[in-house]
Amino acid sequence: MKISAQEEYGLRCLVQLASLNEGESVTLPQMAEREGISTANAGKLMWLLNKAGFVQSTRGTKGGYLLARPANEIRLSEIIKVLDEDVIDNHCGSYTGVLDICVHKGDCGIRPVLVGLHEIVENALSQITLAQLVGGERKVDAMFHSIQGIHRTLEANRV
Amino acid sequence: MKISAQEEYGLRCLVQLASLNEGESVTLPQMAEREGISTANAGKLMWLLNKAGFVQSTRGTKGGYLLARPANEIRLSEIIKVLDEDVIDNHCGSYTGVLDICVHKGDCGIRPVLVGLHEIVENALSQITLAQLVGGERKVDAMFHSIQGIHRTLEANRV
DNA sequence: GGAAATCGTTACTTTTTTGTCAAGATTGCA
DNA sequence: TGCAATCTTGACAAAAAAGTAACGATTTCC
Ligand code: FES
Ligand code: FES
Image (cartoon, rainbow over all chains, first blue to last red):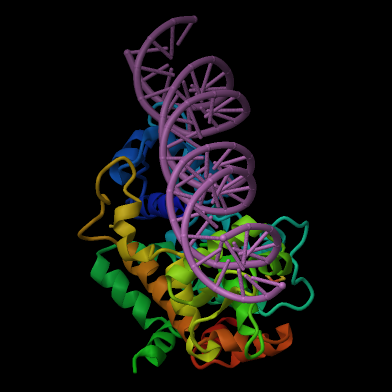
């Protein structure tokens, strides 16, 4: 269960944009520089995010990217869903081994766990907006742990 | 955020073993057949699981695999940790772009979210044992949703 | 002891994911 | 208009993950 490179860097780029001041925008070279990735790679990521409607771009001199919607209206769950290409929706279609379809299809003890896990993650992410990721680590950490539901879940484990 | 093939099939193989009766064991060809994967692939997975101490193997005629510990003492969190090769522990070391180290190292707004997310998942998985995955889908589903903490988290999202 | 069945290990191949490049399109400015 | 800055797009290359193959080791049974 891991975060893909696309999710990681895509999210980071959006955080960059979320922390801009009114009227500012950022170009690909700047984006690349600030995230420590190549310009080409940044270009591809922004292309994806643009297609998905998260960012707005302008070409030409003085061009660049900015968020298409207010940062406090963009939920992490939406972002991850796009960057991850809706992988869970057909879980049973992806891990089929040498067959065309999941051997356990129909009655499977694993599916509810994996699907449920995905729900848990999505639920947590849906409670966080891009705007909340701007600012220092300490602040974000506090925010995260104070979210309804997430807090309780973690507490339950601390014996 | 997705489950890798190793996690998926590895988990499935363990569920197979968990559902055996006392004294039974299962060979690689059987395992492969039942999970719809190749024998070679099953062999590799079982090798991993054996190295990690989850299963016990015997060679030769009448050989095969069985669980090394009682199914109700093996938590999914342990399994995933092994099959996923502890990926979160050095998150900042994996996604470094073209640099040697994460650009945001030191003060990062993303890290607490990703690490926290991992904690949530691990917490949920630590409350489920292999034994609980044996049996029909309906049963497992009910079990999953009745677990302390998980239930609340999901409820919170249902507006 | 030898044949058959089984697991153990490492190297190799294929597929998927990541990342790069190069050529094109749009815009602003002088 | 023409140049420079910028995004866009699709093809390509490199790296990682997944899967396969081959050969070796151990055990049982005759
Ligand atoms: S995971 Fe698809 S049927 Fe079990
Ligand atoms: S994810 Fe490593 S510093 Fe932000």
